[in-house]
Length: 303
Figure 1: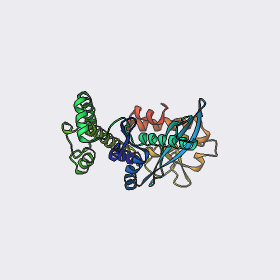
Figure 2 (figure 1 turned 90 degrees about the vertical axis):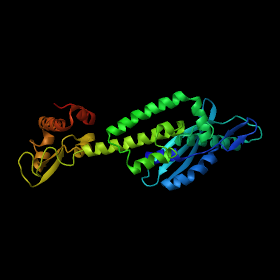
Figure 3 (figure 1 turned 30 degrees about the horizontal axis):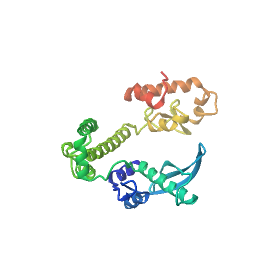
Figure 4 (figure 1 turned 180 degrees about the vertical axis):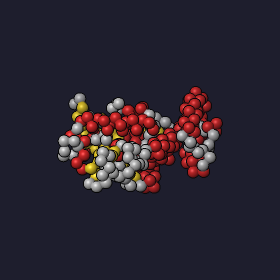
């Protein structure tokens, strides 16, 4: 879901097409953001909807708008709240109109937060961005330094920047550019987001590849204690909250039913045996992955 949201944030452009005659400034409305977002949301198979409520804080009413971002493929939901205070009175508006105006204002800023829209800036045209870059050379330099560190981290994770798919992914968000020397600040910001996305994915793949697919404590399906091959139960060395992790990291054993539960000599009846198995499992794990990794996952030392 977050990957889809990142892609939408990078693609979405909402220029300030509205104009306030009184304040002499341009702005974008909630409707402008939704109109620009809907085609992209459809493409990514996502939807945004709102819920509003009124909260009284310090004797003033605030409209709380929540923007709900839903991935229709996984049903995952991300909720972003925003508040707008109701005016006690506004010329030419009744109470319902005041609440409605506050709702629109709160919804707009919930969308700004959701889609990472900076409402203090003008539309992101290349001409505007290039002019701003000339005024902020230090920002450009800092951003390139950050990107260079990310590229180094990506290389250590063996991300292939010569791969056509990777190149096209980068170009999609940098106006077809691949060199930081050619990018303006907006493009550098997008490049940084893309690199972080690639690094996150590479780390997930690396972590998955490190997980064992087989039992670390046994090679045969037989009772750990008696070598019996019938009436076997699976015993996870680290139970409770760590049971799933025991399964993932292959820290479990086969035991005959009577060695599991219900007898005086069963594992769950003998705390010393339980702890002995935990220390054996820790030794096996650390021989492959090290002590730091064990503590990171299982949180306690049994040796």
